[in-house]
Image (cartoon, rainbow, N blue to C red; front, side, top):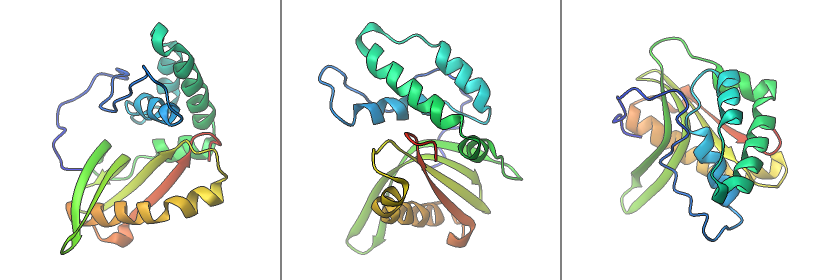
Length: 178
């Protein structure tokens, strides 16, 4: 997540850097569509939901789009999820979305990742969110992705110079709104 996105973006353009090939749908395509649709979310969750639900899908993606929109709407109607995503930390805050990184953790060991959303107060703190569309329960989800979140914390700490204890990590179980 290098600080390269400095251009302002339009409000909810529903275009994404997340690539989705729906010519041959796979099981994880719904997760890819969810990520693509969530990417434009800034601080205004109700406005985002309104715009999202008003955006017509193309005929080729209609079924997946409608399913993804329903899952996202259910998730963002959860007060805990909506408040976490709209909680703006004090200070100068940047929202980083779909940020890829490669980081050498130790000699010969490189870690690659893609953080879904980071609320970054440069040099001070960060909150990392990772959207998960798995069908498992929340406890299994946490166990399954704990190492990934630790790597995101380490990468954010090293890349942005923020002490690891000032970085919070949250998994958002989009199917369950938790």
